[in-house]
Length: 142
View 1 (cartoon, rainbow, N blue to C red):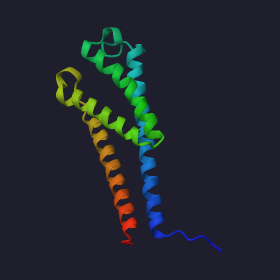
View 2 (view 1 turned 90 degrees about the horizontal axis):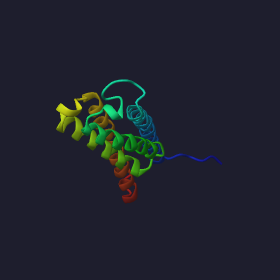
View 3 (view 1 turned 135 degrees about the vertical axis):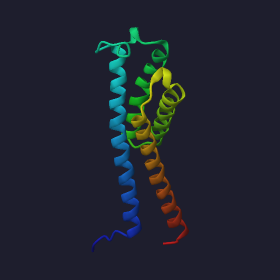
View 4 (view 1 turned 180 degrees about the vertical axis):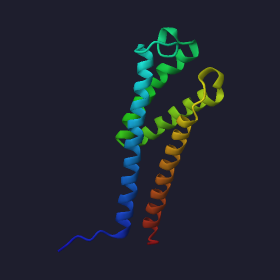
């Protein structure tokens, strides 16, 4: 006797696999950005924005916050938990306020903001597709 995988189970498994891969890739990126912020805090390189004691006060507030939030988001995303996505939204909101609200203080980084927007939109789309598939399956519209 063989076990047969139904098409709806395969679609649900594919959706879940795509979500996990997206979360893992985003989690690695979050760890990388967190590492950059930690390098800024400990002063590995010379430069006004690469050492905490030489940073302006607005960077002294933002840098430690993001140095903690990025690895936390990376951990949650690597584990593919729901709170990882929530922390990712919080990080993206902080970066957006910094880069769009105060570009004269923090500079602009459209690639970073675009990456956050694209990743979060992709995650939202996959979650919505999964919710619709579950709803259809429960209603029996297959």
